[in-house]
Image (tube, rainbow, N blue to C red):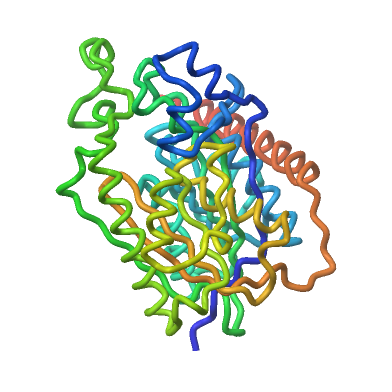
Length: 371
């Protein structure tokens, strides 16, 4: 029998800097009332200059590993879901791998926009089910504030920065990820996009001057799409898990828009109190929104071992998906890992590897490449 992927650790990282609607109203033609009535957002977090997608992802991962009481050497796989990677390449996940000292882990990035965390959760679970990994870290991390035109009222009010992470571990005990649904429709790719910076429109003076490196969105079309697929994906994932909607204890949706969430819940006949909503304080953090919301629900005691949860989201691509999870919590262990110690060890290891490559290159050039 294939092992189940249990969620045994969780962590989040959010910048300290808060940008309120009142402050935005001084930057662009809007008001707090206008933003709240249309989105439910009151404030969002903005990364400082020294914070990046990789640094936030690293902090969230370290917190999750600490909760799971694991060593970084126990990790076999790291997946970072992000729409704002550190670089096109190398993968942000590789930077996280180095920062936490996960010496045995494979690492890659996954791009499915705001649905990315659900996709990554499923990919990691499949790796565990097939035996190619026993322990995985799945991270959603974003610094979308750096991809926003702060004069565009339709987008600058929506997005914020942050990261969230889960640790997944293999177990023969039935629980963890029970089902997942992943869907896409590329015919709507132009509805939510970052037009320039890729191979179709490489960076140039013209693309920069035209603002093509900022997020572009057709709000009304995305709204109609989202309310439909959030309902469909949830129903499909719950049915695939062999459950009914009434069996679900809590829904943790992508935090994009209050009205979208409320409409989906109404269609599903799920009361608002069985849903986690925190977008009023963080805005849309894309791939990070579901794990951040789950971490806060855990802090508030809203999630207990044995609870059945639905994670559901939508995003650019167009993509959408849902996952049904039976919550586990940390496995019993005598190890107690401290994030600060892990980070110190990882920095020493990284420095030693860099020195090793330096001396290897020095002696190679001196003795083997002396033509």
